[in-house]
Image (cartoon, rainbow, N blue to C red):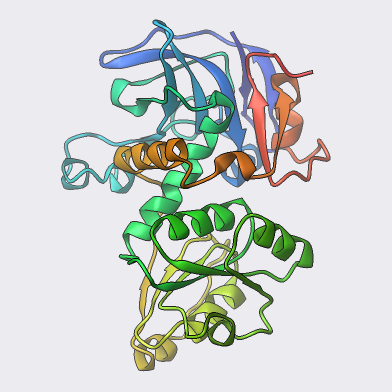
Length: 321
C-alpha cells in the first residue's frame, strides 16, 4: 500500500509499505481522507523511531462498505481512567498516528470501538470530527451552561471549532484575535462578538465572560484571559506551548479562578462531535480548508508546500486533481 512514513527528524516520504492484517478486536479501514495538523508536523520535525505513519484525523470505509471516522486515543481498557471512559488519560495510551500507524496510508487497522460509523456525513468533513471532539472534551471540563458569556482567545481552526461548540452549548461567544483577517473570518463564521486584545470583553459582551478557552499558544494569551474572565470564572488552557506558559498564582488566587486543561478526547466525545455535525449545530463545511493528494502530504508535513490554508486534508484515495 502507499503510505507516508516519518523516520529521521525532518523526513517524511511516500513509500510502498506492508499492509498488516487486523489484530484481535481490530477492524481494517480503507482510508479515504485524512487531516494534517500541528501534531503531525511536530512528529515529522522530531522524527520517529521506529518509523511511523502519521495521521490521527482519518476517515474511510470498513470492508463491508460502512463509512467510519477514526477516534485515535486508544487506551489499555483496564486502568481506572479507561474504566471511567476517559481513555485519553490512560498512562499506556497508544494514539493512532503517533504511537501506532495512522491514516496517511491506504489502509489502517484500529480497535473496532474506535471506528465510529458516520453514515450521512460528507466523508471529506469527517477528519474534522477529531479536533471537534477535543474541543468538546475541553468544554466538558468547564461545565458550560446555556446563557453564559464565553471568550475564545485565538481564531485558528481549533479556536473556531471551540466557538461553534460553545454556541452549541448555548453560550454567547466573543473571539479575541490579533490578526484583522482572522477576526473577520471569525465574524463571518458566526462569532457573536469579535475583538482585538486591546478591547475589553466585558464592554463588548455586556458583562465579563464566565468561561474562557485559550486556543492561542504562549504566556500572553493565557495571562490576558485570566485577567479578563469574570471573578470566579473558569479558564481552559487549551493550546499547548513549547517551554510552558507560567501563570501568576496571585491572579488565580485573588480572582477566585478555576484553571483547567485537557488533551485529546474520548470515543464518547467523538460520537457527540459526529452528532453535532450531522445535526448542523456545528457547521463543519464552513471551516476553510484545502485538499491535497497523498503525493503532496510529505511536503505539507515538512512545511515545504506553501499551503497557508486554515485546515489541510489529504485525499488518500487519489480523486483530487
